[in-house]
Image 1 (cartoon, rainbow, N blue to C red):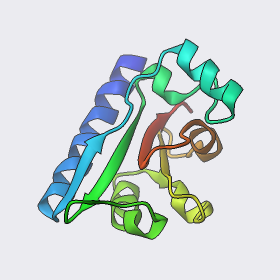
Image 2 (cartoon, rainbow, N blue to C red):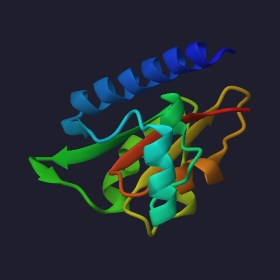
Image 3 (cartoon, rainbow, N blue to C red):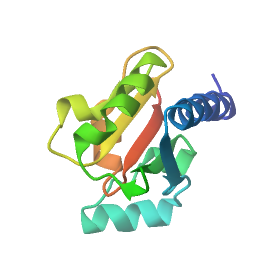
Image 4 (cartoon, helix red, strand yellow):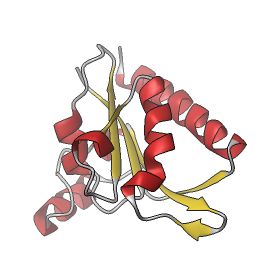
Length: 134
């Protein structure tokens, strides 16, 4: 699968998540979708990300979650989103790293999640979803 095909598939998955969330009363705002390699390197230097972030390939997006107008900061607040992302084929980092406010998901075309890369690459987001290489 080409990078463009992966980006297109990832975009459809994210659209499904957004529609699902909206239908259930969750409100999402975008954090960061694209990150330049320079910004990724700067984040890595500061310890808030990795230089080979999936954002640099347009295969990750950060969301902020609001319920009843209130920004949600606890991992358990994001559980329904994480579980739905898993149902789409995603792997939710909130399962392996429940102490982080950030929810990280990585999805791999071959079905093998690259969760360690995604977790390291999405510091500071409300929810970060990624599509990883095989």
